Image 1: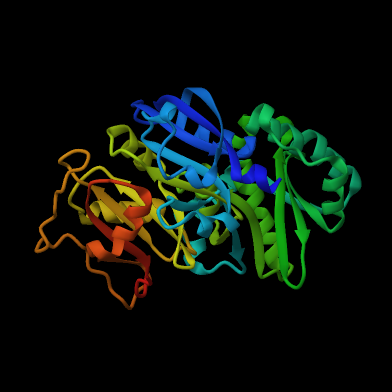
Image 2 (image 1 turned 180 degrees about the vertical axis):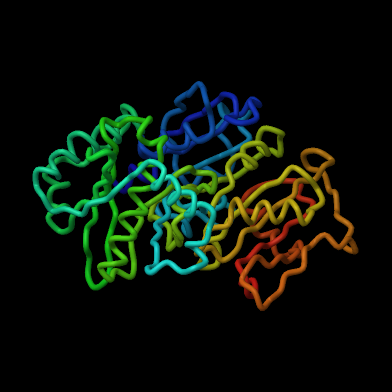
Length: 398
């Protein structure tokens, strides 16, 4: 098994980048079908996959195989024990998954958000109610009519469904929070209690996997009702499980509404490197802002197709992409001279918004080239005109 991890399958994936529709080729070193499928669906709508055989991981970033010469991006799936061993030129380290939690009670700052107010408004409009139960018959109903259908509806043939007995064992250590509409169960959340004042929300579902029920806000209501119930029980930390480490991931953005705090990355990693600064490679980075590991913490990387930062762009990035638990978001502005260009913004231009340090909110700092060049050495040859750090109040930590 260890040898198999080091000698990966090598694939060339060629298709249209999902958002720009520009032609893109990616050289992928993969050891598991799960992560290969995740990356394929993240990058492409449709593509062709060419198998090149097996290759040693340590060669992944030391030159492309001849059959992959046209690729502009290289991605290798690795275990964390191999990251240091592969060297500092082996790509940006992106965790395959990140874990997070919600501290309870949620403060006024979270509860006054428009997203929470909107969830509470939909609960009232749809006349949704909740019920906490340890009834075994209700559990069977949840498992067969909600959890399994929803998992298959969301993930298709690739869905991983926990067996009944494993799920029942989780239920025996917790309870269900069920959502009712007009007296009928329409959704539910499994809660498992841990040590002390902690809880875990591992599984949820909607009746018959119906997207119509999702559309009326049942899933958001399920999360909200469960958090309210746990707060009343005196829980102080709720584990929200794992999420993909890409800032545009729908699940990660959904969890953000409830005060989700990112707490750490998985043992599985992606090493990502750009071998050629092409329009398609830039489009891939713009479409997929990601979390990366650096200096003992998680940071975000966002790429923008303009050379000069403006207050409006920075504020929009902060609102859309910042996640609690990150040390910072680094916004990279592409050179407008095209791939490999060398635009430089006017250092005298007052494009960084001022913030009141007495209030919680974003702070911005222009990075010197020495700050972000180590990142670019790992990522590959890109024309970057400027980079700005965004932090949630306080001073930026490097």
